[in-house]
Length: 129
Image 1: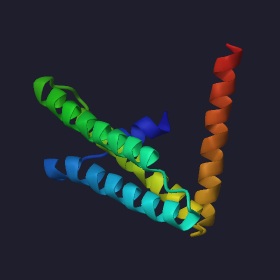
Image 2: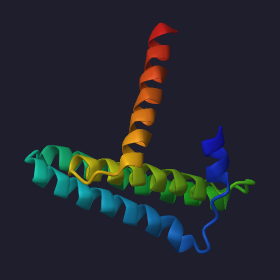
Image 3: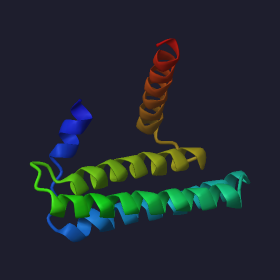
């Protein structure tokens, strides 16, 4: 629940940042992913193409959320929530790419390990339900 509360506190000082920051994050993820794939010799054009399509879908989601926010008055700016989530997600992906490229960031390893354990536990819970 804390993550949702953090996202609700996000307020951009200009609507342009709602679009620009996710674009910068996506661009950073693409560049760091390309560099780490080149370093590791794991270049895969199909994987890169799928990643680009996902980035486009993320940005479309921000646009749709922005339009919905204009059409429906809600206490929370939906586009800010979506953009904030994408920015955080892209930040983690960039850190993961850096780690795979050999740029050791100790706290990132701990965060990624905790996130993976949480996802694994959630998937296990779904299997047992």
